[in-house]
Image (tube, rainbow, N blue to C red; front, side, top):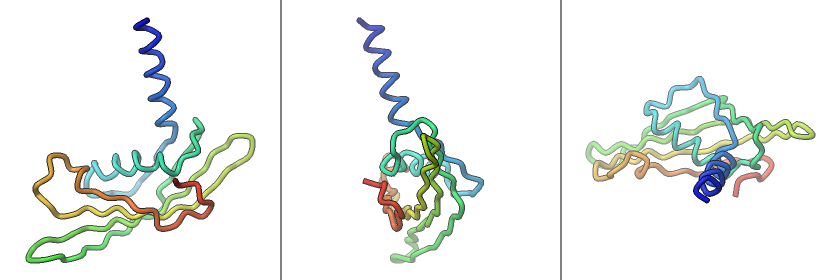
Length: 123
């Protein structure tokens, strides 16, 4: 019984993370790239051969108040999946890295917004 449950857990974890993120761009923090990879599950169709390729990363800083600076990462991505046909999508997402010190984990201060989803794959 334990083997069956373990097999199901492994299968579900593999299916939940079916996509691959390819990036040659620097995000400043490794956690931001991990966060982006996790959030891209919203824009995934669930196929095993999916690839999200980062084509551009732009950063801008927003001075909120006395020394508090929020950083916005605007990330342009290309989605491709070769199933029966080639499926493509162009995405632009924005990640806000809020300048707060009172978070237990770094990812708690990040937020994700889809700016452009050409084929409306994101849910």
